[in-house]
Image 1 (cartoon, rainbow, N blue to C red):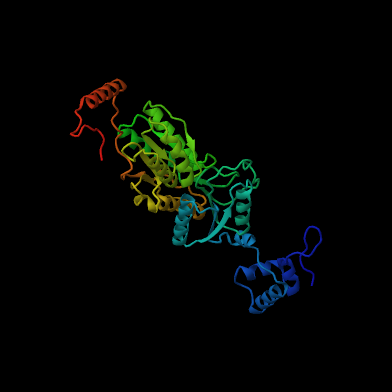
Image 2 (spheres, one colour; image 1 turned 90 degrees about the horizontal axis):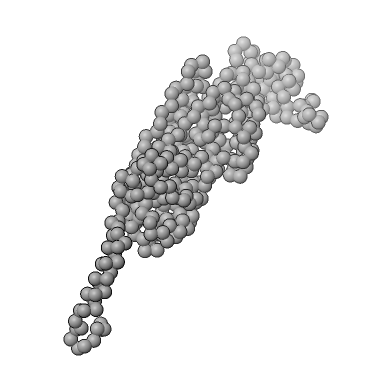
Length: 380
């Protein structure tokens, strides 16, 4: 029996037309059998299934989705990383999808692969998903427009707009700039004249949003904007930044774009003799589980991953099941600043002239103090 052939004439995967030919039925009958439609006799159904098994035929999920209109599955495109933020958001999406009764299909992308999102979306479309969640946190060079096809299912974007057109595009997971504002407002409210920023890598959308929130808050208060130090999300990069910032006596407050960098920063400041929070206050971002147990416990902004996932998936499922209805409105996620022991008002500063006079009085007092008995000023 002749099987399907590829474009170059080589043997390919068997098609429904091959099954129909072997079973002696129409291609429409094959479709009815695999879609479990009525009005197919048991004998015809048996012949079709036996022919499919003989040929090794597997139905095309995308074609089945077109025929039935729904596969009750949602695809997720996410960066393959163990970093706390993306991993926690994916876990939140998984929990919510299970509760909706939909199946979840996840495709990971790799950092540094501009075609990663395009390939991942194409793979999910081939599987016939009813909707897609794009949780891709990185802006890859050359990624714009690399998926030329129109995506005919609703898409929820937890980050930047996708590099393709879709019938329905929903945005979510915003508010990182508002959370950054809360962190900076807290430090300025304690009396710090300005706040330094240890930023995340600027190819990450979240890092850009946090930097913009920091910058806008300083501008709104008329404060100087110190030079930005860019890390890579790791504690090691925070430690390197801390060694640099420790050398500047004017630094009294730092907002780090994630908790890992904040923890590395605190270690470097402490080693350099800059006490946290007595000399320098530090605020992180994420509220990772260990943040409450470092020394000192870290003031940070807690990310509402479950809330973002729940609201986003609710809107996506509504778009899937009500294609003619208006999209549900989005709302900003809650801002939750967790204040712990790594922040306090800045140290009191003595004016330079007064410091000089105080130092002179100290020298004078020392030189006029009587020697202890025995005529020696040394201590044994």
